[in-house]
Length: 80
Image (cartoon, rainbow, N blue to C red; front, top):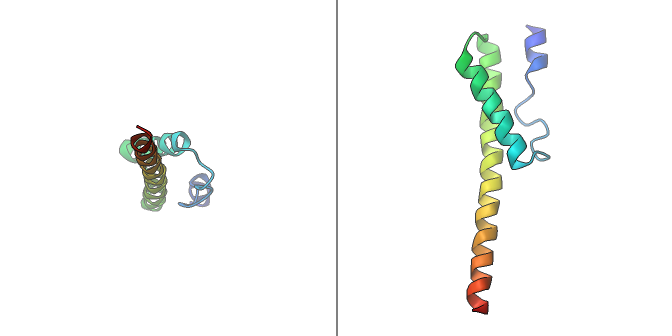
C-alpha cells in the first residue's frame, strides 16, 4: 500500500508550475487510470483528488486566456 501512495502524487503538488498542456496531459492520464479500474479504493481516491486539482488548474489557465482575449478585443475596439 505504501508503494501505491508513493506512486500517486498529492493533489496539489507543483500545480502552479504546470502549463495548461502539462496539466491537461496529466489529467488525461489520471482519467485513463481511473477508467481502467483495478486500483485500490485508496489509490482511486488519490487519483480522483489529483484529477480534481488538475481540472481546476486547467480551468484557471482557460479563464486567464478568456480574460486576455477580452482585453485584446476591448483594446482593438478602442483603436478602431
